[in-house]
Length: 87
Image (cartoon, rainbow, N blue to C red):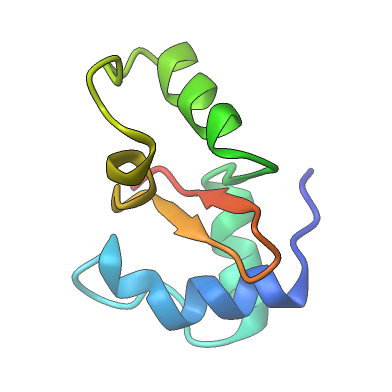
């Protein structure tokens, strides 16, 4: 089970609209439960984001790091890490 920092949960709550049309969480507890249910991952670098997508069958060969960072499933965290949420 992942542990998500408060900073991570707040970022997801604030920016969940980039991935979902309707809010999926309204509180930190709901955000944590949702992220756990969908097995969201926190990774340390854009290289790990790229590896995650490649391992899950996404064709990201032609994508720049900037394009990957702008993907709706990728949330840049204030500490420079990335939250990946499969919609």
